[in-house]
Image 1 (tube, rainbow, N blue to C red):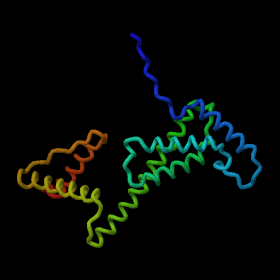
Image 2: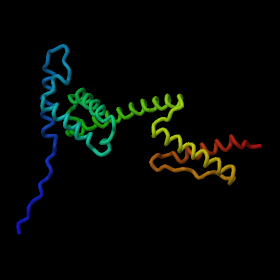
Image 3: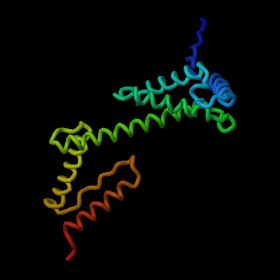
Image 4: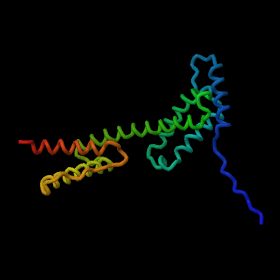
Length: 192
C-alpha cells in the first residue's frame, strides 16, 4: 500500500524572498539623487506587494479580525512599514519577516490606543449630556459600583474587611488593592 506524503503548506512570505527585495530597495534609495525621494518611492513593486500581503495576513489573525477600525489599523501599519522597512539591517538580525511583523504589531497597538482615547472622550461627552456611553464604559461603571456596594456591605453589615480581589494577570495588584482598602477603612473609622 503506497503512502502519500502530506504536502507542507506553502509560506506566503519568507526571508529568502524578502531580504533580496529589501536589499535592492535600499540600494535604490541610496543611489537616488532626487531631492524629494522617500523610502516608499524607492521600493520595488515586489517588495510593496510583499508588505501589503504581510499586513493583510497579519490583520486576518483571530485577535484582530473583527475590529471595526481594522482598515485604519492596516493603513497605519502599511505606512509604518513603508517608512521603516529600509532600516532593516541584515547584520543585526537575519529575520526580516520578524522585523517587519514587529512594525505591524506595534502600529496595530498604537491605533488601538488612539481609538480607545477617542472612545473615552466620546463617552465623557455623552455622560455629561445625560446620554448612555459605550457598552464598555457601562460595564466598567457597573463593576465599580457593585464593588463599592460590596465593600460597604462587608464593613457595615458584617463588620469585617471585604475579601481582596486578585487578578493574576496584574502582578502587584493584590497588595495595591489591600493597601487601598486599608486606607479607605482608616478614613471611615479614624483611630480614637
